[in-house]
Image (cartoon, rainbow, N blue to C red; front, side, top):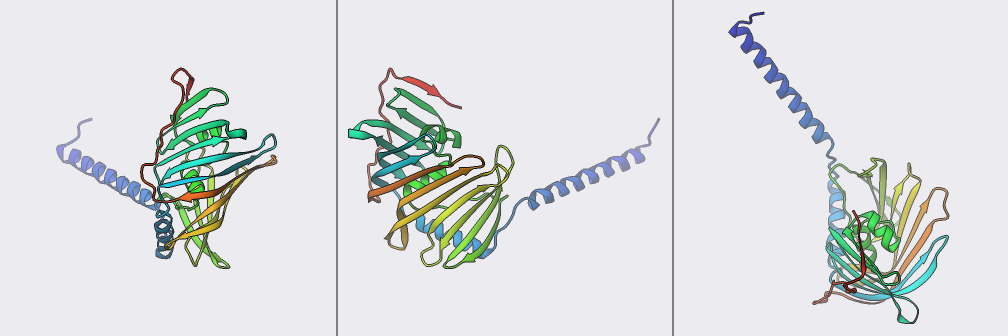
Length: 274
């Protein structure tokens, strides 16, 4: 079949216009995936994060407690923390016996298990935190827990809503599990007077999982507040649940020269996680 030059030009023009229309629709669909929170919500998050960010360069000492169906232990813990970036801690058990020493950065971690003479190294993920210190949480959650001051993070695709409950704002962030795609809701209870998070819960209803983090025993630093007691409760459908607590008796802020290095024997067994 022979097509005239005029007909060929008409066909090509139509295809270009159709492709441009599809590209426009694709761009509109991508824009629809971005959810813009209200200005009130943005202002509240900004104020919370500004105040919490002042709780930085921390050196602290306290006690960690872990209770599960099989474990009921407490130990002493020393923590060095640099906001949004680095966490180091050393855990000692009875009579000062070293249990573990660890470093967690945003990208990588090192966990020295002194009891079993083994070092774990690899990328910082929820799975690596869970397998080493038995708390199934993200790096940001761990930063919030150990600093006693919460920074609220969300993605452009998340849906944010706000309600009020007594003297608190209740901020809900609806998102999806990045791996499985199941819906997840994180709810923050923010005290109106001080713009600090008193508690927050991560709820994965379809998976039957919930983690709740409670902050108490607050101390003020200017207009910022930080909690010296943090309790974590994690429940999974069909299980008895897990309980963790951190109680810090000493905390110094804005410390210079904090060390984040982990010391371990050079000939120790090493396991690299993925």
